Image 1 (cartoon, one colour):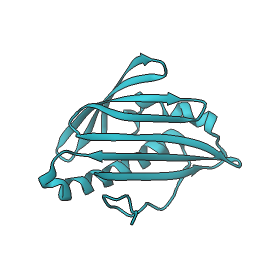
Image 2: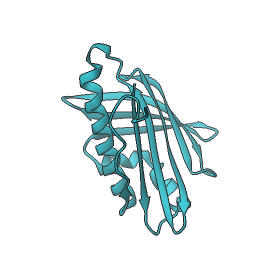
Image 3: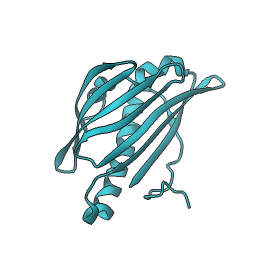
Length: 158
């Protein structure tokens, strides 16, 4: 299983302002050509079913996740329902630090191809990092990303 943890600061912005922007998943295809399609279905009670089609290598990954929105905490959690991945769970979380907004993205995933995991999953991890950075800059504008955590299946933790 791979782990992607990213964080950054949006200077002069606040969590209440940026939370709905981050949660605007249907807008993501406008920001990067890697995201081909996002379709959202309202499931009620602050939940959506979100279907994604994303370019990966020479193909397209497709999956549906359930998103749970907590506007009071400026957090959205997502988890895989079905699709081309074996496992996907994570969250976006925002909070204010002085006059700035800290944005956190966390994701654990498993491509479900054990014999190729050592080859495919590091590529998927770096691709995800790159596209989260592109999406953040497209949605938020100025954002200063922290140095990436070490790449690895333990999320850099020993």
